[in-house]
Image (cartoon, rainbow, N blue to C red; front, side, top):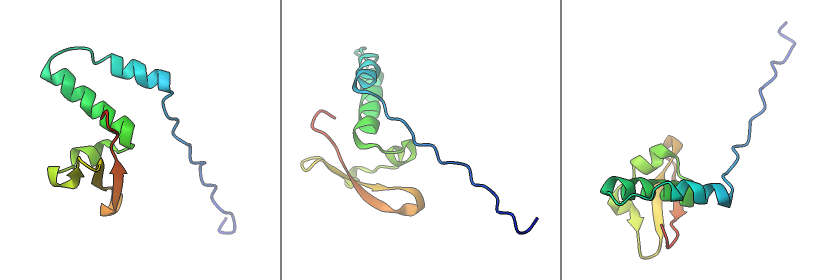
Length: 89
C-alpha cells in the first residue's frame, strides 16, 4: 500500500458574482439607517477589493490611503499586499 499515491481532491475555483448579481446585492441595502450605510460599505469594500472578511475586520485606519485609493492588507500568514479601492467605494 505504500507504493500507492493518495489522490488529492481538485481545488474548486470560487465563482464571482455577475454584475447583475452585484447590483441586486447593493440594491438590498436601501435603508437610511446608519446600520444600512455601514453594511453597504462593508459589502462594497469586499466586492471592490476582493478582501477576505478577516482581512477587512483587521484593517486599521493607518493602513488606508484614501487619496490614492490604496489600502495595505495583511493576509494569511501575515503576508502584506496592497489593494485598490474604487472611487465609489
